[in-house]
Amino acid sequence: MFTFTTLLAMLTGTIAIASNLFIVSKMSVADPEFLSLAEYIIALLIQFSMMCYYGSRVTEACFSFRGSLYECEWYKCSKRFKTCILIMMMRMDKPIYLTAAKFFPLKLSTIISVLKGSYSYAAMYRTVG
Image 1 (cartoon, rainbow, N blue to C red):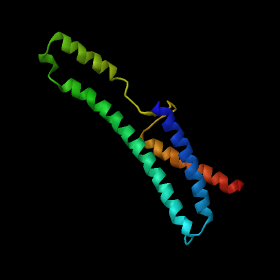
Image 2: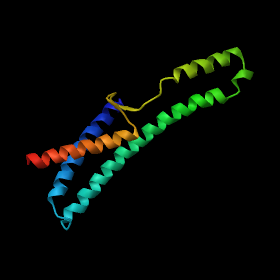
Image 3: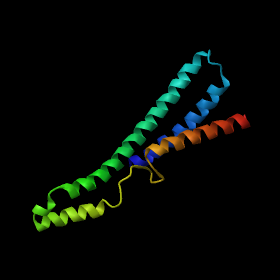
Image 4: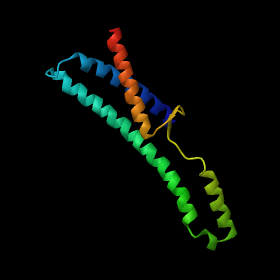
């Protein structure tokens, strides 16, 4: 449900950053709208950064959870508990990723991809227009 919303936010945000970069590149720093557009671009980047940062944190927590399972004193517990720990550890072999509609994971490298895409679109706008 939220993954599709996240994908739409990433796509529209990338387009918004690209178009605003294009507009900002055409105007003077002394222009009164320059600051508001720069603030909008920064706000979009902060939004992306937060989504990707916490997506990375979830994945990191998944890796550390597996280690924590192993480090608990499972060898002193019942057979049923040992089996549950084993099943959980086997399920943790595949890490958990927050995704944008299963197209790409939300991790810190995604921010760089968004910036590259935005800059490419802005450069394309500049050459076409």
